[in-house]
Image (cartoon, rainbow, N blue to C red; front, side, top):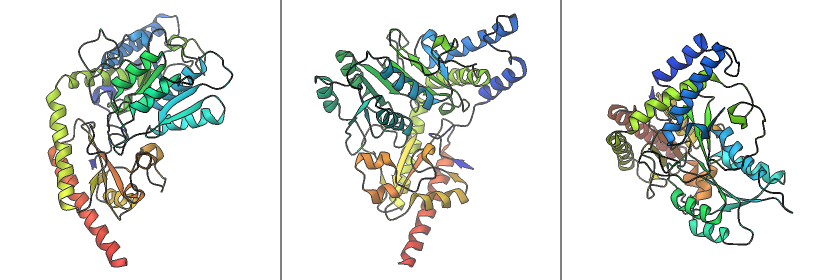
Length: 396
């Protein structure tokens, strides 16, 4: 199998699997129990919290565990809006239509329930948010009180100017949530100024997910900066009173192990650049052999692992089925929206021609992707595209 769908999920690392297995066999007691066995499990959970905190450059006390990146996003956005002082009308929340569906759908739901009004910030053709529009909105009398923008796009890999967004939000005194699910574990980051040198994200709330950096599905985390008001939809004593419910200990310990491995891997910048070169090699090979194909957002800064390629006059579903039959895993848009025959709403929101959006396929590498896999994958894509184009031409 050739796996180029790592933005959907990554293969769990051995350390994560071993940590989860050990938790199920040996650390199965409730971490909220006061007896010695329960407190031993609590200590393991806190060590994992410290590992996740280290990955994103935060203090352990500011990290809470959730069930997923989606829950983290929902808790951050809905919780921040709900914690605002009561007013005559719902608070204004600013975001973009190129967010992951977790971000888009929670805002649409909040709007339908009169919990918020939504300002959808425009982007350019590459999907980069227009910060000038945000600046004007934040300077208005009816300014957004919560801003939610992802750091890196899950479909195109485009990197948003979060440093500028954070600066604008801080100057206006509003809450900034950053969906960092695709960033964490792929690039260095820090959410505290005192953390080791890495790109600084000056956000109030930051969402991440373990299965995007070789942990297990079912465990996410949310960074909550001290002093940030947040109303939890699930009250309880667990997770510093921010999220009720017995902790998923196997998933949390696996997340800690995966975070440690990711932190060590991120120390080698050369490893990421080698993988970026492989991604570029993959794109160049396909573009040269498949006339008319286009890299969506190719002109913008992107994560090293993500490639979204449009194949005109072809359907992404047909391409994916052909690739799957030959052992190559990829996706069209977000995996969370799989099964839809409609083109990616992210690409449409960017202003991509619907005909191109219909034929767009996302390929995403992991830190373990090799040159041999890239070359084999590119050859498979080219053969499938040529075959489908020949079939389409014959049917006309």
